[in-house]
Image 1 (tube, rainbow, N blue to C red):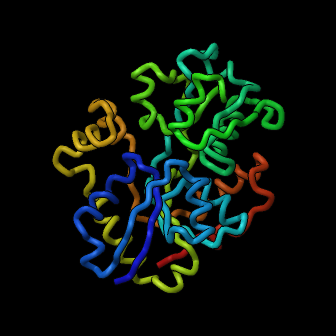
Image 2: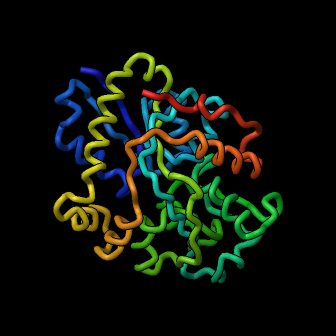
Image 3: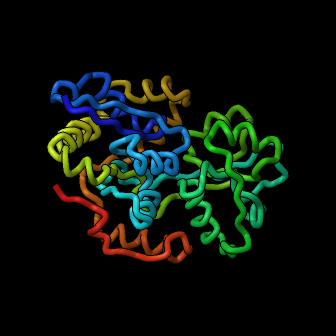
Length: 284
């Protein structure tokens, strides 16, 4: 039995992994795949990959690109979610800020440096025409739970997180949605450590084959919207909308798309150099 560990956020995007693990589909192929939730998101997963605590991750595209350029020894093996991630821009319900324009020069609450909430704060600032050197400040709050606790206390002024994940907290009055910021690229990729790719390439291929078969059929699973709503405490109408907007992928990311991610990160001074995008991927 080959032992492998994969990390990802505990959100509705990753329900296909839960289903395949529950059904012991990897075990039947001689792979003991174990899932680890990362509430802290991309920054926390990147650290776990570097420290060999996990072998692979379902991770934000921009975060993984930055990590590889900064020396994290991993490769992207394919896109997982092809559609953009819709980042909601949130403030506490007791906040005096009521629009994205009001947030210029305030503190963005982020899970950690290098996380999606950190990188997308720059993308949003650029979209708004702000000076990213002067109009951005950060407060580390670790995860969504940290934001829910600290924003109402004035620790951090706004928080960017996936819009549908935070929707229940907007509905219950903890947070207020003031804007949205979609990623300009495919949002999630699957990344694997280089040493694992070298030693367990066939197992990785098998894992991808299994998850891809499930994501191809995911939207057709009977009552999948009800399952998501119950499991993730979402309203059924929100789940239906999210499913209509979300497109899984079974293909490797295009080099042209990686070039665009690098260009944006470089333009925002989030990476110091660009590399040949072909160095970031592996083709099976």
